[in-house]
Amino acid sequence: MARQKTRFVCQSCGYETGKWLGRCPSCGEFATFSEEAVVEDKSRYKRAAAADESRRSSSVVLSEISALDSAHMKTGIGELDRVLSGGLVRGSFTLVGGDPGIGKSTLLIQLCKSADKGKILYVSGEESAAQVKLRASRLDITTDDLLILSETNLKTIENEIINIRPDIVIIDSIQTMYTDDITSAPGSVSQVRESGYRLLNIAKQNNITVIIVGHVTKEGQLAGPRVLEHMVDTVLYFEGDKNFSYRILRCVKNRFGGTNEIGVFEMTGKGLREILNPSEYLLKGRPIGVPGSAVTCCMEGSRPLLVEVQALAAYTGFQTPRRMATGTDFGRVIMLMAVLEKRLNFSLASFDIYVNLTGGIRLSEPSLDAAIIACVASSYKNKAVAPHTAIFGEVGLAGELRGVGMCEKRIAECVKLGFTDIIIPTANSKEIPAELKKNVRTADNINMLLSLIL
Ligand code: TYD
Ligand code: MG
Image (cartoon, rainbow, N blue to C red):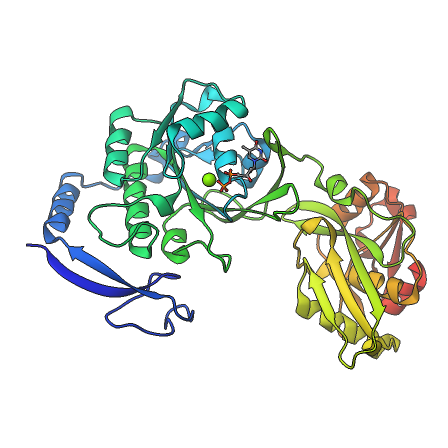
């Protein structure tokens, strides 16, 4: 006999309690508890236990496990392969998160384009089969290996998977899936966790590659994030600014490779296009000879990215000047302003200061510091940095320029894009390639840096 019971579940982390709480003791979020009615069907667990008995697994010697099972399978999208450290692993469980409308469905349907991956089952809980077809034909996807299922009931999906035995299953999205065993609404933590767990079981038992889409909440987290993130093998985030057409695919967890690669795409009228040279793309339209602009090189994983940092120091009559940072860490910008005031006697108290990373990109690497200092000083003194100058380095509280990692790669990228005067921290001077020495100058501190460029 089923027993009716309710409990309160934190919608952020999945913490459960018998009574309502204002603040979650597990993740510290406020007002995240909602009451979920749960039917606890004991016979269900008995069935599961019986099934477990029948498929007792036994241990295997490491060297006897076939390596083929864990080989990376190319997806046909170069940038996606790069993020996945070579491709999808057969039987793996991948979560793709991102804001609504960022292009998750588009990316996954484009993944189905090249047919050599075997049979793909695309389960859409958000669109009808006809809508998926419309999108697919817009993107010139005509393969017969792609099967579309418009369904949200997990039982039906499981049956379909068992019936047609696909190689890849795409679930779009996990928040629309539900199982009858749990009475709470689709998208609640209990439903997401149960659906995730059952899909994981199917993936591992049948060696099916499963990719699930997860929507991100307003706070920028996957709904029920912790319950899903520890369960899956790989977590990818698709980010971007709605006002810009480029998108960044970032890996935050990967059991089969590194997590420090990014993939860059552009959303076009014909789907997502890979951007092979993101630096060039980000620097497009840069103002030349205008005060308050500096180019720097940041590392995203092992990939150097050239970005333009802009600053505006505008005189203000107000008592409290405004400080604003777009695309980078606000606290860091405030700290750098203090360094400028204390070490170089800049009087910034009567200036509003705005710092912006162009292109809508978000970075928080310390090597940005030198460029932020340079462009604020450039705007304050109304003198432009030369257009072929690039600057990178971390700035310490004493005003010293500190060394950064992967200096060689950064210099090479700057030179590749036509920057012939690169200012780097003196601490990095040993890493300058001999043939590029003529293009590089070094600085010990911000005073020296500014005297070299302004
Ligand atoms: P979608 O993949 O549906 O986003 P998600 O699944 O993450 O919610 O992408 C929707 C957006 O992408 C929508 O605003 C329209 C745009 N888009 C294009 O610009 N070009 C295209 O070819 C496609 C398919 C979508
Ligand atoms: Mg979608």
